[in-house]
Length: 110
Image 1 (cartoon, rainbow, N blue to C red):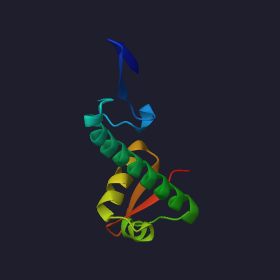
Image 2 (cartoon, one colour):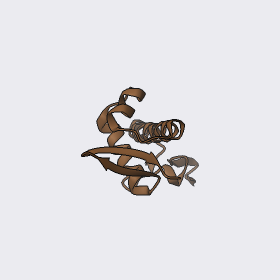
Image 3 (cartoon, helix red, strand yellow):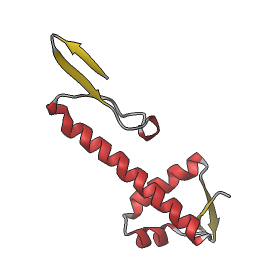
Image 4 (cartoon, rainbow, N blue to C red):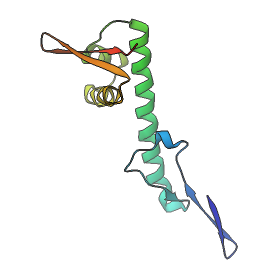
């Protein structure tokens, strides 16, 4: 969004898509002093979305229940980040969470 003010253009930075935005994210003025904050937030969103797609691809390819540790090791990612991403996918209804002998397993929703 660009607005003219005394011949100077001020624009607000926005993420690429509303679906990538999180509720706590804000728009940033296009001034250079806000660029680093924007870039950091945007990078976090892109990393989360990339991990989510990698997890979904793995679940689709394997077509069997997978454990958290197995997925984290296979993707070479931190278990905490993978667990957060999996929980978001479970909350969205994209994947299923089941337990077998007190161990969590994740499967893709058909």
